[in-house]
Length: 156
Image (cartoon, rainbow, N blue to C red; front, side):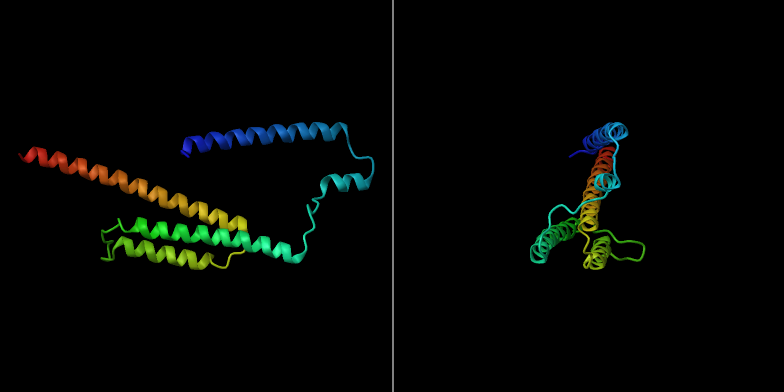
C-alpha cells in the first residue's frame, strides 16, 4: 500500500474516532449513570470472555508462533536484501556484513519479547526499513546508471 494511501486511511480513521468520541460524550452527558454501580459498569474495562488457563496459553502460543514465523520471514528478507550492499564503509568492511550483523543483534535483543503489540510494531518497523532501504538503493542505482551513460556518451 502506498504511503499516501496509508496517510489517507489514517486520517479517515482519526476523523471517525473523533466523531465517535464526540457522539459518545453527548450521549453520556444526557444519559448519565444513576448509581455508583452504573458508573463503574460503564467506565471500568470488563474482561471479555473468561477462558481457562489452558485455552489462554494456547492462544498466546499461536500468536507467538505466527509472530515468530513473520520474524523469520523478515530476517530472511533482510539477508536477501543485504546481498546488494557490496561496497565497503570507511573501515573497509562491506555494508552487507554490517547490516547483517546489526539485524542479527536486533533480532537477538527482541527475541524474548512477550508483548504481541511490541513484537508487531518491531516487525512492521523492520519491514518498512527493508523496503525503504531497497527503494533508496534502486534510486541510487538508477542515478549511477544515468551518470555512467552521461559520461560514456561524452567520451565518444
